[in-house]
Length: 184
View (cartoon, rainbow, N blue to C red):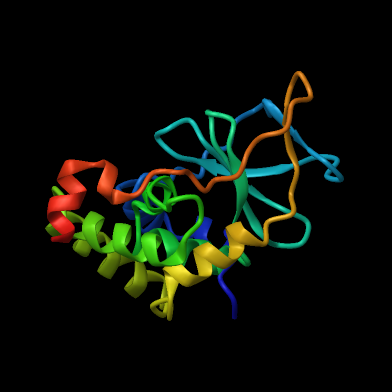
């Protein structure tokens, strides 16, 4: 049986562990954005950066940042949870994607993994979540993230009607001395 939000919410302990990976399943009351073609967006959660996760009618998971960026990040809810567990710093991978370059995203993932401050806590959370949900590891979470964002066709707009931009950012890890050194 595929993992759904409804199945996940019955797993209080697992939801708590996901909170340690910066995902909350308490949705905002009022959306501060619109999505072209989606009447009532189903907000399913948020992160500590002010961003919102939305489950689209197509079952894709959309991320809307508080800084005017948006895009589909996973093809299914289960793929979303696999991404968060495998790469809790997925948003930073996109930040250091050099405009959407898969090779740069892989470099960023390796550097970010090497710089985890609380690696033991993250690994414990990964084990607890996978065990609690009987969740298999994602085959290629970076490739799946790249594909989801690159093919994202959701158009998100601010309340004034201006469209949000892509989640891919122009930076690479070479722009950050700490990550550049971690990759060396």
